[in-house]
Length: 326
Image 1 (cartoon, helix red, strand yellow):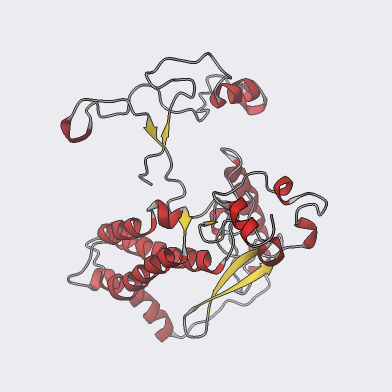
Image 2: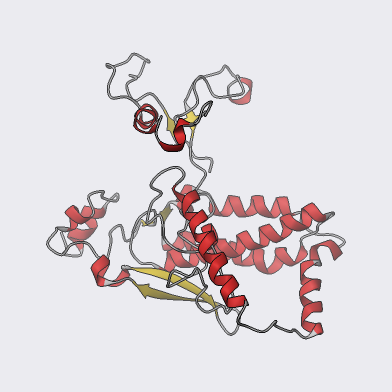
């Protein structure tokens, strides 16, 4: 994502003077807490503790050839496509990593919507070891499943159709490059007023664009070699993901975690303490539904709303007062 988010010295004043030492930065605290423990005792190990790069931004010069100005480093980008790690993917209602509703499909890592990380990402590396555990379990249960079912057989006409679909972009003699389609997707999905600050009219506008791209442009992509064929399939899959994300954002009529609805800036545990599921309908349309979470997972009943959710959204208190829940 290319927003203006920057990381600066929190102790620096307007002219660069400091206001005292202050607490050590997070990177220093992390190093003191973890270095020298467990596998971190390995000799010659170099670790990235997550601090911003030192010195001025790379490139030297300023915008349009002007003088270089240290404006800090832009951050962000990890959320410019998928949701938080493990926050989307194949839905699984038990611990086998088996897809609900898709016979014989097992998944792990970011392909599995396990919600391992909750509504926000807790720490660097958290997703990696979760993926390793899920991969081991998926392999175990998938192999057990495969050992008990007969080898499936498909009609040759069906196989030929799938092969033709796979190679379609190589057969087109003219059309749109996968890189251009991917940039079109990014320009539609990554503006902060679509990705972060959501509102129905803006989401519907982005959805209309994504639907058009999938219908009119994807079938006309062209691939000049195997590499571009892969990019064409990736662009098509990312567009499918984008449509699912927009429809889910419209469907969930509340704010929760990194999902912020400008028109409904508050949590609603009575109606939306759930996961949003999407599946392909009989006519190819997306069908959305709620998978309600156990009651015992809700915030402790004796706590106030603000005690349960100490971090307010912009305009949340005013919105709750307006609907009589202040």
